[in-house]
Structures are given as C-alpha cells and as structure tokens.
Image (cartoon, rainbow, N blue to C red; front, side, top):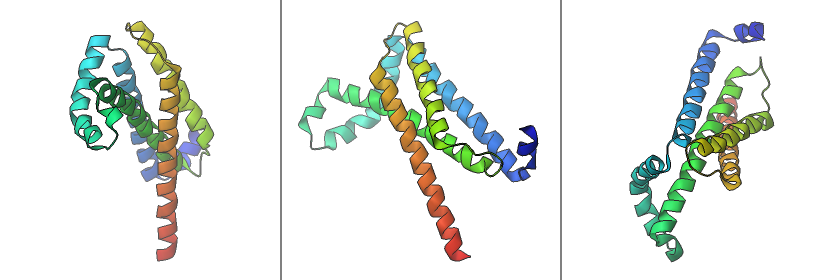
Length: 164
C-alpha cells in the first residue's frame, strides 16, 4: 500500500497528506464540541446563533421565528455543516489518491457515519444526550459534501476536456 502511495506524483502525495491532516483536525473539532458540557455547548451555539438568527428570521416561515426554534435550527445546521465539510474533505482525498487507490464513495460515507456515531456516543460522557436523528443528519451532511465535491470534480474534468 505504501508503494502505491509513493507511486503517486509528489504534488498529489503532498496534497493527500495535507488533506489527511485536515480530516483529522475536522474530526478533532467535531469531537471536541461533543465533549463540551451542556452549558459550554449552549454557549458555543449562542455564538453561532448570532449569525444564523437574522437569516432564519428573514425566511417567511413564522413557525421558525421562536427562540427555541432558532436555537434548534442553529444546532442542527451545525451538525449538518460539520459533516458536510468532512464529506467534502473525504471525497477530495479520494480524488487526489486516484488512480493509486480507489476509495468508493460508500466507504467514505460509512466512515463518516462511524465518526458520527462515535460523536454522539461522546456526548454521553459530557452529560448530554445522544440522538439517532443527529447521526442521520450528520450522515446526510457527509453525503451532501461527498456529492458536492464529486460534482465539482466532474464539472472541472469536463471543462478541462473542452479546453484540450
């Protein structure tokens, strides 16, 4: 396996190492949020809510304008966004490692799902509850990130073919 990695051009090897480090940092960030006690977690959500609130209030859905609903949307958007980023990073890594490695999107999604399940389990150690719905939301975020990066790569490749 190491031989296949070293067979990649230096530029791709460097990009892969940077992406691997970025993925580890993203997972550490996600898990560090889950290790926060309920008060600290809510404080962090309050910071994000200052950005999200005006957007939610601008939407023409009056049921979303309550204090509790804005908080709920902010927290769920946080889940989705963290895993969207992780999914995008994973797909980008898979693309950089080609052709030496064929990382299928389903395995990347399963990896992200395992990270999400562990993430929710970590919340149990910090006095917070775990929710299967959050794991599903995380998986949907990761799938969206995987798909968005695959689509972007496909459009980029198509554009390069037209220019050639």
